[in-house]
Length: 104
Image (cartoon, rainbow, N blue to C red; front, side, top):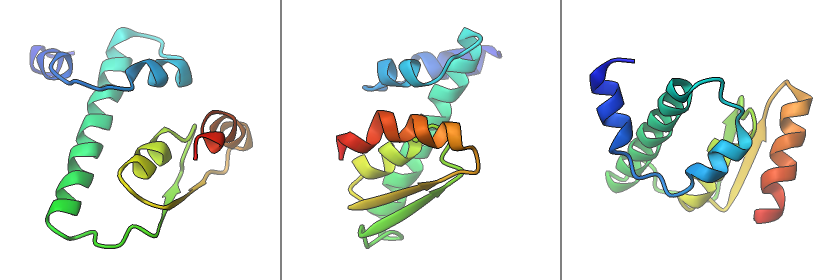
């Protein structure tokens, strides 16, 4: 990983990183840092879309390719009332339901 990426990822204050580590089985610290950056960028993009009123309704959202459901959780935390996760991998959907469905 480049020095820039290391510095960037170390400065991210991600409040729920322990939850993230409990969901994903990272093979290296670099993969965890890269994922942490993607989550940070996703969250910042969503906040910008909300602030600029590109997103104005928070009734429902669909997370296509939801994997283990973490981004669905983030979308929900941003204020969407109903978030539906879709994935072709049934075991991952099962993990997502077990981890997040009861937190609604």
